[in-house]
Amino acid sequence: MFPSRRKAAQLPWGDSRPFLPRKYSVFQLFFACLFLAFLSLLWLQLSCSGGMSQAGQGQELVSPPKACPFEPPVSLEEDPSWAPHRLAVLVPFRERFEELLVFVPHVHHFLNKKKIRHHIFVLNQVDHFRFNRASLINVGFLESGNSTDYIAMHDVDLLPLNEELDYSFPEAGPFHVASPELHPLYHYKTYVGGILLLTKQHYQLCNGMSNRFWGWGREDDEFYRRIKGAGLQLFRPSGIKTGYKTFRHLHDPAWRKRDQKRIAAQKQEQFKLDREGGLNSVRYHLDSRTLVSVAGAPCTVLNIALDCDAADTPWCAFD
Image (spheres, rainbow, N blue to C red):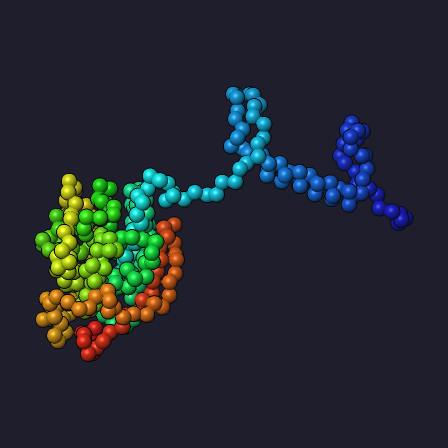
């Protein structure tokens, strides 16, 4: 009733295939499958589909399989047609995530189209002091490393739309991309905010930006005087015919108020040239450095805690 030996598994075909045994054990079937799988992997390793061509419709492949040489993946930025310099896009930031989600992929793809090697640094202020755009840019400059040789001081709410805008290495001097003739809001002659390109050498020559500007505004006007004081010539775009439609401005003042309060002596100090402080005196602690991807666009988020000397700039915080 119970046979002493288990029957061997049978293949569905009969004697018409003499090169295979009619009956074999389960273990023999298992090892045969392993052997066939090994042969398949070996063939995939040694064959090169790119080296095989088809002669025509209904014909077999005429080229025999070839061993594939190892070719590491090549980044688009390794293409020699890309610019040789590398740009650090410095983006001062605090609690404007909706704008950031639009900004990072837009600027990344915009610069890729222009074949500008770049990396975006989001300079996120995490302390409890008032916003300090200039100090964040100083920190971004110091933390951007040696892999970049020029910077873009770039507002998060300003998106370039015209592909003729120049983001290349500003060897001759600072290049103001968002010039008064093109910026949708600010049109005075000494304006250098929005988007400004400088070589790292020129930024150091200016000793960076003043750290005394807590709250919104005026740090760009002071930096214009630093540029002139360093003997640098300021350049701006030419031949751009899109006027005030050259950029998209994301900021909505109806629901995002700017900190424009002037406290105590800040009203007088905001018009003075800071002849001592700047890149050499910025005080901060880097809480973290995180590489993230926004809609496929890479950027590095620097969580920055600025420090304030309340005896020197008591307007860094509200009472």
